[in-house]
Amino acid sequence: MAGVDILKAGGNCVDAAICTNAMLGVTEPASNGIGGDLFAILWVEKDRKLYGLNASGRAPHNWSLQDALDMGLERIPRQSPLSWSVPGCVSGWGMLSERFGNLSIEKCLETAIEYAREGFPLSPLISTHFSAWTDDEAPHMAAVYHPEGWVPQYGEVFRNPLLARSYEAIAKDGPAAFYEGEIAERIVAKSDKLGGRMKMRDLKDHTSDWVDPVSSSYRGWDVWEIPPNGQGIAALQILNIIEQFDIAALEPNSPEHLHLFIEAKKLAFEDRAVYYADPEFADVPTQWLISKEYARKRAAFIDPNKASTSVRPGDPTLDSDTVYLTAADGEGNMISLIQSIYAGFGSTICPDGVGFPMQNRGEAFALEPNHRNKLEPHKRPFHTIIPAFMTRNERPVMAFGVMGGDFQPQGHAQVVMNMIDFGMSPQQAGDRPRVEHSGSSSFRGGALEGGGRVRLEHGFSDEFRQALEELGHEVRPGVGAHGGYQAIWREDSPLRYFGGSDPRKDGCAIGY
Image (cartoon, rainbow, N blue to C red; front, side, top):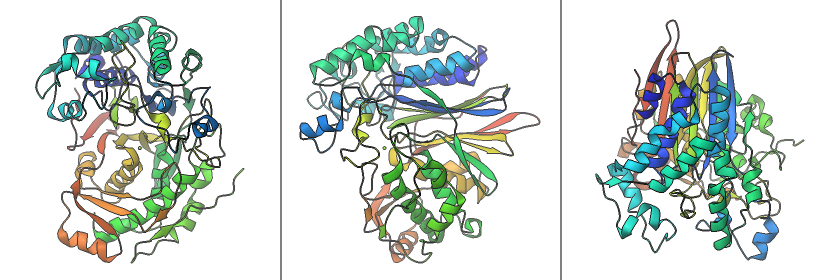
């Protein structure tokens, strides 16, 4: 509603997205906030063009693979400032607002400041975040989220005056308040106290970047993602492989349909484990990985009647809690925005006096000397959060995303198949039960052995489970909830929008 109010006040979709993101930083702090990173894909109607924004931060200058190995680390610890990379969110807000916004940052943060100071009642879902840890487990968050020693419960009013003060500083002085002012000093002080490597230079040097989104067509529809250091191209790889099969001839969510999807996912994720990294530091063959020629070669490894049990990455010629939101306005502008602090409450460390935890995205670095995603000074780590967009005939069709760590490319592909192959509406495409495949491969290295495991949601029958097992898949017992989807679908002549919002999460589609 805060975002809708911004639209009513003369703001555009960019202003509404910034406002909504800031509100979510207040009301859903385990999943997002200004201690984390941001990515966006934006359709600007007057330019008739898509823009991409990579507002992810980099490792400290004084933090290297050799440093980590000298400390005896096998992986970077989550609950430590060693897992911190510079938060890019606030710089992302600044770049979006300065280039495309109608309203000031001050106006966009106004409502979030009020709710942080005055408080809001916790929803059932958000209250579980506050009670999922004890003060002994995360002592550096207790003063912010367990005030006066008590854990806020469902329905109780929670206030965060420290975050209100941080937002006020950003509203007054812009991103400089975060990267050069008192907030930055408090981040560095906490890092120094706990043995971290973050310094004022790291924050002051931070830049976010406008990037060109990358795309691949799926049966005549163009699907767009942000290029690495994120995992967005995994969704394009999955769709390219799936396109080699007549999915529309199959029953939606049948064993035959989802077997092909799972096998395509395995192939794409093995490439992800090897090739996805910061392209400023590593040779990432993005265009080859999302090419149709490569997809045809990879699809040849799929047996329609049997699950693969050993998958290796391809051999191209070389030269991971989150919130997702989307907004559209009356001018025809649309934004797909995702923002995260990685794990629940990030590193679980709040610098003193700022009201937010720092992300632990640096935990994603590999500590292997030959890995493309290895830890290096001032390098961006591999990222799981990915916004998406779909166009047709160079016109915008849908802004969408499916939050949820490793699941996100899998969710993107399942939603697109539901719409394009099976003709579902934006809401139906998200309501449909989903499957998730997981295996031993990861962005820190390692190849899939044994075929991995499949998890199901409610809505799949015992017969479906048995059929997947007969194809050779290991299906985990029980059910879960996979991802959190939101979308806005656009129709022209006259301009109108249709929303879809996932019933698995808090959230809804609102317009006026």
